[in-house]
Figure 1 (cartoon, helix red, strand yellow):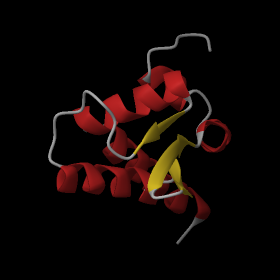
Figure 2 (cartoon, helix red, strand yellow):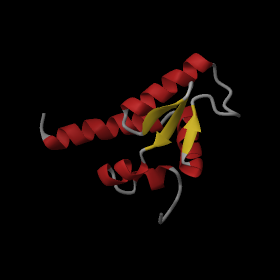
Figure 3 (cartoon, one colour):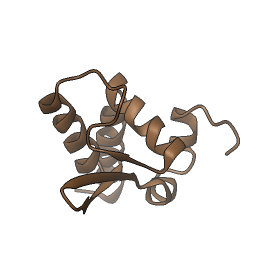
Figure 4 (cartoon, helix red, strand yellow):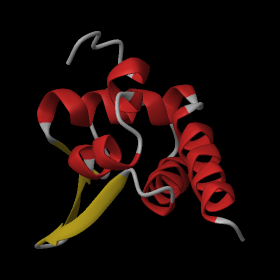
Length: 98
């Protein structure tokens, strides 16, 4: 695969992950708070569905997951995303010039 094709495929994966309203809400929450528990308050989807959303975000390279005791904490990979796709996250999150 050509380097441009690989980057296009990676971008498509990131855009797909951000294209779902639940996943976008999770990313917005992490952008505001820095991280999120695996079952954040105020998200009204079944736990199994939420796990799938977190998996898609992780596999797209948007989040990292770490264990804190029995809990899992998700963190937005903002610096990595800004390096790979400058301005994308700010545009998706409606941050304007940030």
